[in-house]
Length: 251
Ligand code: URA
Image 1 (cartoon, rainbow, N blue to C red):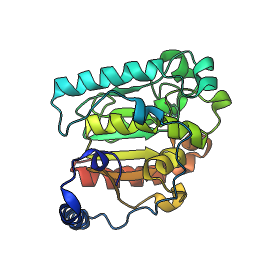
Image 2 (tube, helix red, strand yellow; image 1 turned 180 degrees about the vertical axis):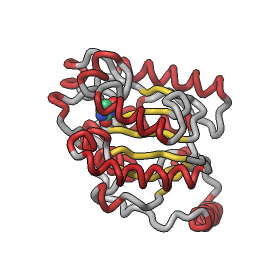
Image 3 (tube, helix red, strand yellow; image 1 turned 60 degrees about the vertical axis):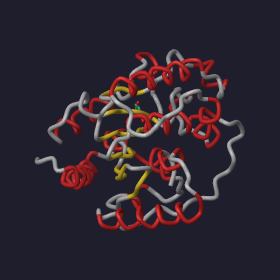
Image 4 (cartoon, rainbow, N blue to C red; image 1 turned 45 degrees about the vertical axis):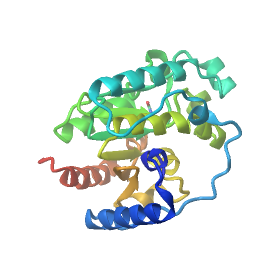
C-alpha cells in the first residue's frame, strides 16, 4: 500500500509479511472487501514532489507538528515548477484547506479558475455544492480537510496529464501522511484513479472500501459532474450515507 505504509520502517522480510497479514486481517474485519488492481505505474519523468521534499513525516504527529509540516510543504508547493507550463500560467498554487486533525479528507482533481484566483480549493460552483454535501453530512468545511491531486490549474480545466499527476503525487501523499485521516473520499475519476493507482472507472469504484495507508477510502462522483447531471446527486448521497455510517456520524 502507498502513503503511510511506504513511510513506515521495515523490520525484515518476516516482519513485513507478518505486518501485511495483520493489516489484511484488520482490513477484512473492518469491512474492506477489495483492494484496487494496481496498474503498472510508469516511473515519473521527474521525481515529483516526493523525491525533492525535505518534509520527513513520522507517524502520528501532534497538532503543532502537523501544522508546521504542512506549512513547510505548502511553501515547497508554492515554489514548485516541475510542470513549467502550469507553473507559468498559474496565479496561485492551491494547497489545501481545513482541519489538520480531520478524520475525513476530500480529494478532488485540480483547481479551476476560481481556485487559481483565490488559492483555495473548491470555492467555485462545484465547491459550493461540495460545501452543501459536507453540511448535509452534519459537518462543516472546517471539520474536514479538502485537497486536490494537482496544485496548479490545468489550462481550460482539462484533466491532469499522467506526468502532472506523477509530479504532484509526492505532495498529496505527504499531505495525507501528515494529516493521517481515518477516511478519504475521492471525488471523481481523476482523484480515485490517482490515489488508488488504478484505471477502474468511478462507476466501478463506488460502493467499495479501499485502503490508503491507515485510511479507509471511498469514491464518489465529482461535484462538477453533479452540476451537469443533477439526478446523480441521489447516488452521491447514498455514498455519503455509507461513509457517515462507517464514521459513526448520525444523520
Ligand atoms: N474541482 C476540483 O477538483 N477541485 C477544485 O478545487 C475545484 C474544482
